[in-house]
Amino acid sequence: MGETRISQRAQSLDKIASLQRQLGRISAALYRRLNTYLEVVGDPADAAQELALVLAVSVPHARRELAVAEALARRLPETFAALRAGEIDAYKARKVVEPTACLTDEQARAVDRGLVGRLEGKTPVNVRRAVQRVVHKVDPAGAAARAMRRRADRRVELRHRDEAMATVAAELPAEVASAVYARIDRAARGLRCKRESRSLDQLRADVLTDLVLGGQCGTEATKAEIFVYIDFRTLAQLNNDPAELAGHGSIPAWLARQIAHDPSSVWRRIVTDPLTGRPVDVGRQRYRPPVVTGEFVRVRDRECRFPGCQRPAQFGDVDHHRPWGKHGGTNHRELIGYCRRHHRLKDKPGWDYGLDGGTGRLTVTTPGGRTYTSDPPPLHDPPPG
Image 1 (cartoon, rainbow, N blue to C red):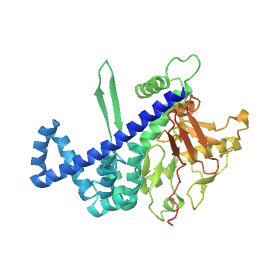
Image 2 (image 1 turned 30 degrees about the vertical axis):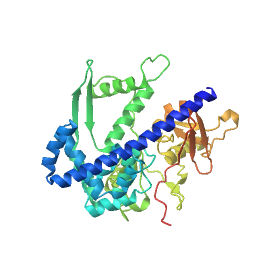
Image 3 (image 1 turned 180 degrees about the vertical axis):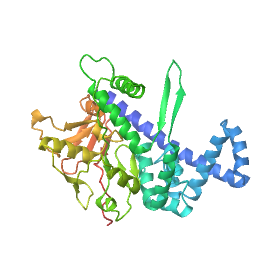
Image 4 (image 1 turned 120 degrees about the vertical axis):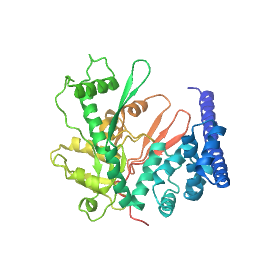
């Protein structure tokens, strides 16, 4: 790629980023005006009826936008400030508004303060996770009760699509859904061979169909594997800090303990640095050192380490940052977890991955010359101060 083309690519990305920030500022101005309009009208239902006509949207949509405007102005001033600064867009602002709608004004403001400086540069999924993490800390009892109530909403739906296709969607408890997907994924990967023409997505769909309809998916029964991170004090019921379900985010302490005490669960001791919360060792019973090293990397990284990717590490690859044949070491400082897509991207022209073996920080430089970083997430919050 020539220098002129690289420069044009970088300039285009700079302009796109600038326009994105402007969209945030425009959205903030719109929400400020919507809140003023709501204050003038007084009745939210009446305001939504007329607003729906002006915006050519449904009344429920207009009602939701008014609720977002009111929440930002009255309960979430720091998030509103981030929107006005263009640090987030309206979609991400709603990812803060929605999970805090069930909280009291005081709790919502506490969550809002806890998110200062933690939203810019985050994907919508990571914004949602950050919000949920703070919500669990601000209102642990309420979060636990809400999780229990939501489990009663589990269901399966059939949604018909075009071109003779349809979608079967299941609303399930997070740990059950994760286990279902892990079971399907492992069986699908077991069917891959040189003669297999189906893609991995097609194999997963066919495995699901065979499992549900009683067909033969061509594999022996495989045990699903999910990863839940819970600190010992929570496990021992000495506190109720939220745990983490890989690929999902925070789950309440009661659920983590329930999973941990299931007869089929396997516990693994993980030693962490008390100052950083990062793992320094995993238990080594039953495993040869190379396997333990790979497991350590998956425990440490939790998900694909490419910035913004949430693919659980258990479904991806453990990569030598420097190829083994070029003196890359087989130790956790030289290894990193990627999903298959971002593992392959590493070798594409113009992409550069830099790994700091000391901190685990990954720096990705794009063909347009922009850099993005990701750090291995701590397994628990470092102590304050």
